[in-house]
Amino acid sequence: MSYRLERERTATTPYIFIDEAKGYMRFSGESYLENVPDFFREINEWLERYLASDFAELTFDCAMEYFNSSTTKLLHNMIRSMDKRAADGKKIVVNWISLDGDTMIIECGEDFQEDFQNVKINLIVQE
Image (cartoon, rainbow, N blue to C red):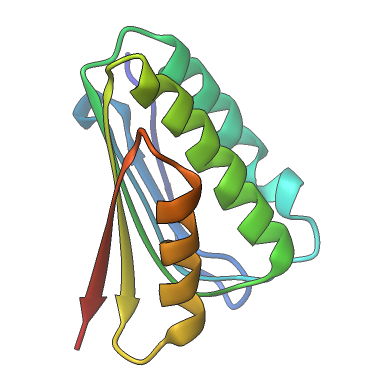
């Protein structure tokens, strides 16, 4: 049985959706909770198992509106793990989705594009 997770958005946590069977993960909303590592522990554990497996592909849609520095570090570490597997030839795509004019989110996506050479990071700016 493949892993599937859906967590609704709250005032301080993002919407999370993972469908392992489809090789798909989505985060959207805001993340500025007190203990980021605890909230994302299950997700990180799944991602590490998934990346270690013989998966076909992974698409990660990240449509965050706001996140704190702890979440930035978490996202960086997650994409770094994806980048390492992409270096092995695995098809991994990150769609970094932001609203036009949201310079903080756009700049973070641009930084990730510069930091990681193997994973494909698409910067998608919406009106």
